[in-house]
Length: 268
Image 1 (spheres, rainbow, N blue to C red):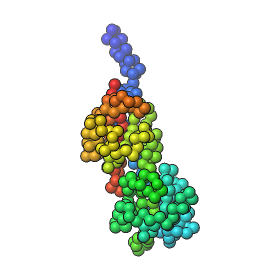
Image 2: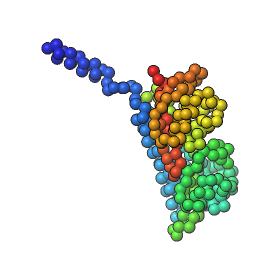
Image 3: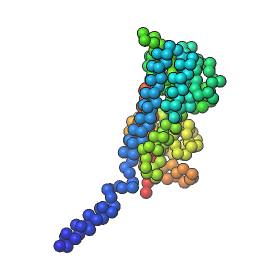
Image 4: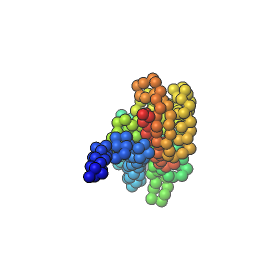
């Protein structure tokens, strides 16, 4: 009888506590969930861009009322977009939406690496973060506009800030407010962080990070490894004192460009 009472008591404790780690989610699954949502967001934008490219090809041009309609529909379908445009074979942005950016029509972006890569391969491209003619640090996602015979007519572009895509992904992926997300691109640029003043800083050269060798070593691991776990020290948002943090990271990739998405939590 005593054994049965003890067994019942243990079961009640287990039910009260929930599964091991309840309320403290394991970091690798949280990072993977973050990455899945971010990947879905990028691919959604990519599909809409592909549809716009087909619509432009059928409409017969990069300018005119039909092109404007296609760009308007594309902009509405991409909530994180700054603007969308068509680019001709001289590298000029010949039609832009929304109207607030019409003044930039005619701007030349033909010297940008991703535009030349699209011309060379006739395949979709995504840039690293670059300084744009709009005066922003942003990413350019482009699809070729191809005639029925495969001839390149130009391209169609969505310009966006990575932090907008990643903030939306984190909101969809996370229900545990004690976790802290951040993200880094292949150049070591911080492209997302809840501490806004860290976004666009370069991990390996910015003075903010130079006093934290564990973080720099972890960043080098992240460049080399698509997923993993680690420990580093850095102040929590809004604080000056460094905390030890556990983290895990995963990767999203589109058209050969990847980002490392990190989920961290102060060690207890």
